[in-house]
Amino acid sequence: MSSWTVLPIALASLTGETFEELSARTGVPLKLLLTVREATGSAVPAPEDRVREDELAFLPLLQFQLALGYRPIALERTLRVMGDSLRRIAETGGETFRSEVVEPRLTAGFFPKQIEAVTSEASKVMPLEEQVLLEIYRGQQTHVWIASVVGSFEAALARAGLHSRLEHPPVMCFLDITGYTRLTQERGDAAAAALADELARLVQRAAVKHGGRPVKWLGDGVMLFFPNPGPGVVAALEMATGVAEAGLPPAHVGLHAGPVIFQEGDYYGATVNIASRIAEYARPGEVLVSQEVVDAAGGADVAFRDIGPVELKGVTGAVRLHAASRPG
Image (cartoon, rainbow, N blue to C red; front, side, top):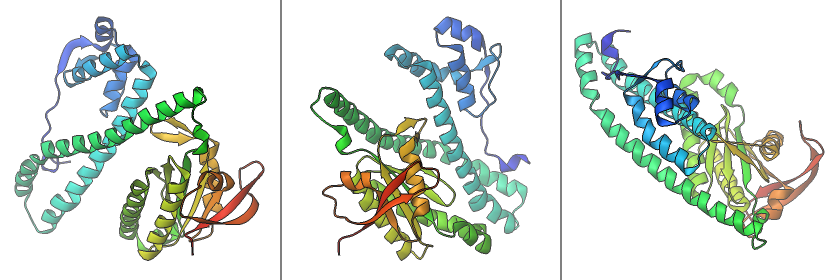
């Protein structure tokens, strides 16, 4: 790769201290310190490797969190999730710069020196992007922390017998696009990218509106989490309708309510698996929910039609399903 295709980035210098020595001096576990470099996109170092200057910036936070009682293994998971998420952001930004700035100029006949000048000028955007990332993170952090505090209070009240959280168990939702793979094969990558962008906008808007959030994209669909069943079903119906109105291939949606395990930014457990199987069973344009969702969705502006017990692939025993719709 020639030098003019890369933004100028200063390389951090090495300190005179090894990771092993830094761990002994600060009391921060060695494995946690090694994870710091892994989170920044580099290979995991050896204990005798020297620490970089920029890696010392992690120390105040790690020491403070350890003093608060954070377990090192939990901090390692957090660093890895942060590293993976920011890597994807960096890759997306780099690809966008290439497609929107470099490639058009190459096509227009710009010389390497001309593009190098544009690239150098574009490097001024980096601190602006960093500020935007910080503001987005603060907004997301506020929502998560508030939900965490509320959840902790609910759990404490439940242990005291003053509140039952199971009246409103969380809901996992899977939305899949019918014929997504065939469509991308027939129309190409550009059509797939346009479809993904449109679907992302629809899903994000409906999820946030009803208190939920997309957890991860799955190629031909998305997994979502909703803390309350009623709003989750309403959001699912809005998403299915929005997909149809946007001219996208029809979506089939499944929801199931119950306890879930949250780890490293993802959700696990039987509730997740059953919701996925319900979505697979649903027909194009259909939103199906389990009996658990119906029982916990009281007050929601939704109608349910009983389908009856259904045998789902990979699920032991029959699951009673209902087709959800808006009243009238």
